[in-house]
Amino acid sequence: MHIRVEYREKPVLTPITPWVHKGLDAAYYKATVFDPPMPKQTLGKGWPIWIIEHRGRELFFASPQEVDHAIDILGRRILPATRDLGQPYRAVNSHWLSRLHTSFKPWKVRQELVKRLKQAPAA
Image 1 (cartoon, rainbow, N blue to C red):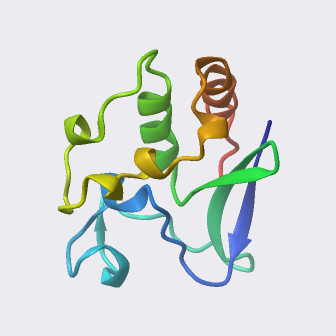
Image 2 (cartoon, helix red, strand yellow; image 1 turned 180 degrees about the horizontal axis):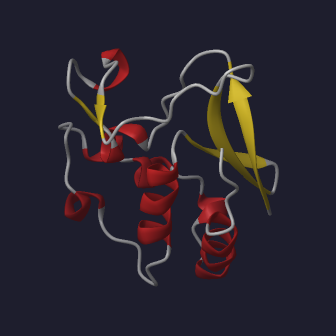
Image 3 (tube, rainbow, N blue to C red; image 1 turned 120 degrees about the vertical axis):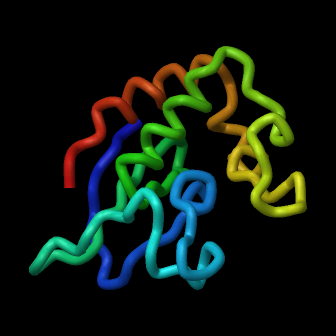
């Protein structure tokens, strides 16, 4: 399992973004102003995105707050039910945890994932 920071030409929104960053001027994908704020562009590089790999699959995080949120949820011995996490959108299946690939869900894998996420490099 490896975590790294890459930079993109445009700001990136991930499936975790609406659960961490609330759009102030519009809903999720159309918002440009967030609370808490999204990371700013690094001049000459672009917008940071944190990526962790496991068994050929990748998870993406658009901010350190998203990494912290994932650590909180994935670090629980028993994963919470989607409805217990709150739903800004109506569909139960809209939560990022319900969309998480099964290779990331075993407790042993999540322990390693949380360990690596805590080592996430700064942008």
